[in-house]
Amino acid sequence: MKKTMTIILVLLLGVSMLAGCGGKNAAPGAESEQPAEAPAQTEALPEPTPEPTPEPEPEDVTEPEPEPVADLTNAFAFGSGPNTFVFEDVTFSFTLPDGDWSARQRKDGEPDYFLIYNLPPQDEYKDKDPRILIHFSNGYVVEHGSHEDRIDNKTIAGIDMTGATVGSSLFVEEHDSYIGIIDDVYSIYIAIQHIDYESGEGKAVLDSFQFKVK
Image 1 (cartoon, rainbow, N blue to C red):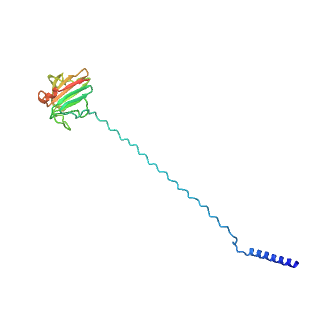
Image 2 (cartoon, rainbow, N blue to C red):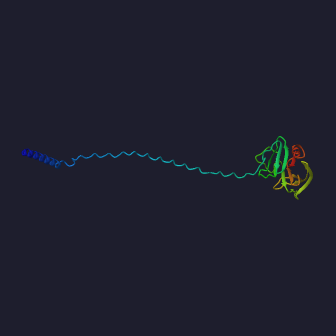
């Protein structure tokens, strides 16, 4: 019995020693390595959407206001037949025959001057052209100058007017002039050059004159 126990112990001891040698002779790194965990995949973040660049606001370009133009009311707007021109509170009415007659306000925009020409409408008129000039005045009366020769008075548009003849000079053509009072505020000066106003169409034009105050 003791012999049997001894054999068993020897066998166990041998097995134990073999196991110890096997552990020492194992190749380095033979220990089982745990496989490295794969890094967790991170979802790619969406790229930020670039904000739209605001377009520059258009500059406020203000066009310059046009320069004031002289008031040429009714300028170049008169032809044959009945016509009306207004100066302040005075309405001037006249009739032009068919043909070579035209009328306009003075081109430089002076509202107190009005001209009737024995000519068809022109782009430009000359100082020597046959014409009747009407000058309206407010608050004063134009007087005949000392170098004028008096002629007979004449009634025009129901107004008794004093007459004179003005000789030609550097600035004016020879003409007949008439001055009359419309009312206690307005007076009128009429100058006629190179037009026969005692007969024919010239007389008809002059006879058609009417001046009415509001």
